[in-house]
Amino acid sequence: MTDSKHDNIREQMDKFRYFPLEGRKEKGDRFLQPWLFCHVYASGSKRKGEIKRAYKEVIRFFGQKELQNMRKDAGEDADRIIEAEIYDSANVYLTICRDDDGFGKKLFGLLRMKADEKENKIIRDVYNGFIPLLARMEDFAERLVMMRAIDLACRSIYPQRLDDMKAWIDSIEDADVRSVFDAFETPEEASES
Image (tube, rainbow, N blue to C red):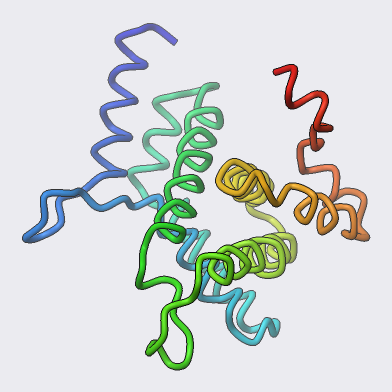
């Protein structure tokens, strides 16, 4: 892809992804939508109907005309460009969850969670909610990337909990699903990098 074509695609993606929020200086981020859909439906009953609804919402998001046009324009680089947005938005989503005081509430929203309770909740949401939900949503191209992205985002935000995350991933019975995730570095490998 030429530099000018890449710049054009990047500009299109930024226009699609970021939008003005009425009365606020920050911009909204459309790529947070799939994560929000997953959060809502993973927190629900986890019945087949919930999975179908989550699937419909996520498919609808990635099927939007603007994204499909960008895919065409980007050609063979389309998947790489979309994947980069998915990885970035996973980091943004979990950072917002970690930093937002409103996210960690309990007792009908009356009490704030302590930092360690909030950390446990976010990690539980990722490994007991998002990833199993995405694993059950077959037949959409971005699901494996989303699973890997939310895992890597969680690893980067909570590196002190890598052992817990590794234990959860190691407990996945389906070898194909387990193979989606990057290997965990040993402490020696991490200190060398």
